[in-house]
Amino acid sequence: MRFLVTGTAGFIGFHLAKRLLGAGHVVVGLDGLTPYYDVTLKRARHAELERHNGFTAVIGMLEDTGAVAEAADLAQPDVIIHLAAQAGVRYSLENPKAYVDANLTGSWNILELARRIKPAHLLLASTSSVYGANAKIPFAETDRADEPMTLYAATKKSMEAMAHSYAHLYGVPTTAFRFFTVYGPWGRPDMALFKFVAAILEGAPIDIYGEGRMSRDFTYVDDLVEAVVRLTDCVPRIGAPVGPDGLDSLSPVAPFRVVNVAAGKPVGLMEFVETIEAAVGRPAQRHMLPMQAGDVPRTFAAAELLEALTQYRPSTPVAEGVPAFVAWYRAYYGV
Ligand SMILES: NC(=O)c1ccc[n+]([C@@H]2O[C@H](COP(=O)([O-])OP(=O)(O)OC[C@H]3O[C@@H](n4cnc5c(N)ncnc54)[C@H](O)[C@@H]3O)[C@@H](O)[C@H]2O)c1
Image (cartoon, rainbow, N blue to C red; front, side, top):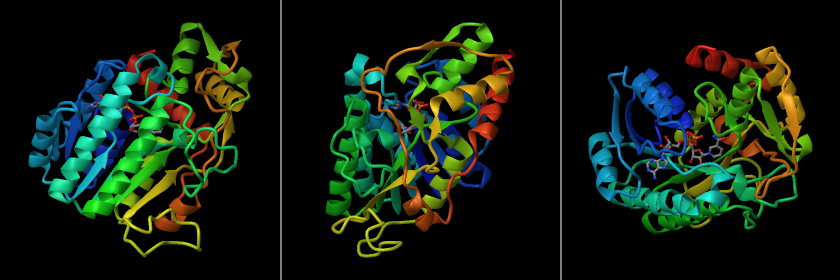
């Protein structure tokens, strides 16, 4: 099959594209190599992908309709997977415009593209952050998620809403994933695991927010990719929900659903830190701090819909996934 994947120089897009290429698919990747974090790492990911004949990179921004059209012309995609975004919860307090540009204008350009070229399935990356202040756990796709705590969450929720309206108006089957704290080799330098490992190896202190009382539903990246690949085959159709009544988030008026991609097994922050210390083989200097603005105390996914759709649920424990990240980090940076 032929795929257009946005964000292939990013952490998740890289792993997904590698998996698709390994299975013999053709992938055109659109990525603007934005300077939000180390661009060398993004280039290195693309260099890995370029070893496959089936891969072509288009370096361009989502906001640039010319670049989007160029990527689409090259790809002639059966499936579009839109992962490129301005990610990160905390940075949305510093640079809100980047979120509006990439996640609203950029995502709208992808919706317009899908309206024009009508792929068999459009899949979009949303986030657990859309659950915001939701106090009910686990977080289910059918829960109200109308109280975003950051502009990042607000732009992702808006993308879901825009995509629903396009699916209704123009009939392109659309799935929005809600990802939950993804981690693994080639990970993101702005995320806790990367920062903690770097600091411990340098002998620098690590900042632990929420006095360590937060928890996250971590997802190992290979598990996430497995779920995403399976979901590409689960094309939403109006009137064809899965599972028992009330489980599916399928829209009654559009071929559109949202799906949590997660294990549904939250891990406490201090257990996570201890797992990192064990994997690095050194204790961390722990610098305990209060919650930061915009942080939520915990994330906890209901994974039943994912399982009903794909017969799969992520299961790699942090005790396996964290050492895999540390091994990659040491090899990549030679430390
Ligand atoms: N990693 C996680 O834990 C997590 C959790 C929830 C949701 N997500 C979502 O998953 C997707 C992938 O995340 P990731 O962790 O791989 O992030 P990432 O930052 O590593 O990758 C995003 C990629 O998109 C590119 N990009 C950003 N803005 C762009 C623009 N305007 N035009 C073109 N390219 C642009 C960047 O250069 C980058 O390579 C994002 O949509 C993110 O919001 C990730």
